[in-house]
Image 1 (tube, rainbow, N blue to C red):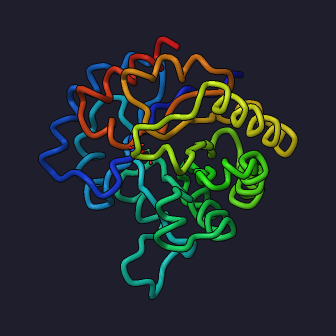
Image 2: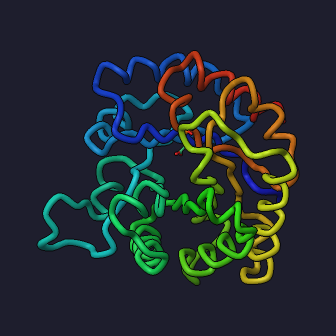
Length: 246
Ligand code: PGA
């Protein structure tokens, strides 16, 4: 079995009810060649899932590691699932930086998400300083080992490689840099998990219609986690189509 191809959109803290109108056009471009997931702000999960745009899965951007309780402002994985989410992004670098999330936090959240039957999209990625110091592969392997729990399988876990310096900057790594990290991720996952060769590996960071085809042609790249270019159907649709054809 080959890894599933996935085009995932991360809307971050963008979008409102009116933005749901983008979904119809996005859904129109889906031909079954890849899975499509959109992770909007939590308030939009239920209306987006209820809209039931054919072929579009809906995901959260974070969840708490506990199942319920006194955690003001947080959301439990089961609540995301109840609202209609099938996926959740965990350990995005903005969560790691803004909320001091550690690998252990991400792993605990992933366990909670799997218990709630959510598919986790677990993010790893080096900072520019770490790349400049030659530490990229070591950082990536460390984050992967610490953030992905033992209960991960190809059915419940997707890994996204997102170099911090490429997110929202318009800069992308070279093909060789992406391929090198994805090869390491594949090797680490295959060493640790029986079905590690089947886990989907996404690249994220300034993916656009103009560079999608080239990125999707790289070995061990099974899709993308897309921020800015997932907000508008005019941008996300060609990315979905490029992946479908890849
Ligand atoms: P970007 O964001 O596509 O806007 O660079 C990617 C992400 O943070 O998931």
